[in-house]
Image (spheres, rainbow, N blue to C red):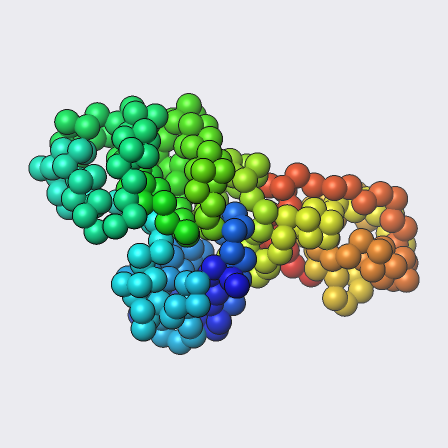
Length: 297
């Protein structure tokens, strides 16, 4: 079963397209990184999964539950860390707010919550309205994880955290996975921070899911090619690439190309290019290639 699945998900705000027929598939037990620039549609996707927003068309399911028809049951399966957060209870202390949130989750683990509070150095007796941005983000993380949900939706989770707190958060997510098996969807534009966690990736660009694949497929099918081009060379149809560098005389080029390496090399050779080398990319480089991929000219 897919923990998260959307089909034809579309959403507009006035004349602005937020999502355009998004088909998202997140396998149960995976750590799925949803990459995209700010405004790409990541937060809108999360809000529709939580039934906080309604799609104009398409469906969204959580463990087989339609989020529009079964909003409360679907949300009970989710720990959510929004990109922007205001608890609305600024007069409450952190401890009181956690007790308030715990009342909504029968599965709330008080001992685990206490351990997270100590790990994040959250001041339990300080009012939430007096917290720094970093402290607020850490408190959000506790609220998302303490009821040990089977699905975590983390929207830009490291935003507002200093480098030490970022590492600490990612370490706690790793420990959480070993302690409480879960599916995690992380929406971010800081790909390098979650590289060690990810086993699936999806790329959102201006509301469209331009690619999704496993980590293995990403590393196998997105590579940087060193090419020697014949005079008047034209890229063959079907080659998805980002042209990153070409020599002044137009004969030498370096392209990042998305596709099966053997097929890509054969197509390029038949079109009159000599493939000197196909280099593997880092996870971040490959992810960025998915977002910027086009057709080589």
